[in-house]
Image (cartoon, rainbow, N blue to C red):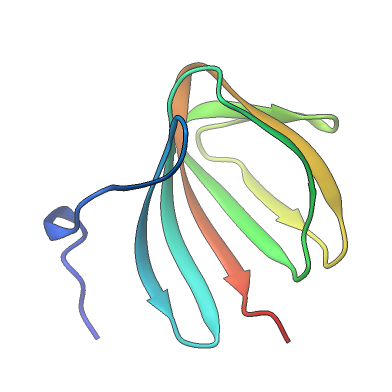
Length: 98
């Protein structure tokens, strides 16, 4: 399967957050764009999640993640996040819920 990411529209999924879903075939792969200073309350990851920061930065209790940083969240992990002053774009990969 080949996807022209530029042909996909951004879809709002929360205030200040947009998404482009690339696939959902056993794993979910999304591009996520957060506007500046968007905060997500603490949440639990039912399954493992991996994130690669494409631009900007976001933070959680563990630190600040900027362009080029890869983050791995284990199944059942929890955190709250906040995007930086310039927002951020992230490639997010999740296992489908089992």
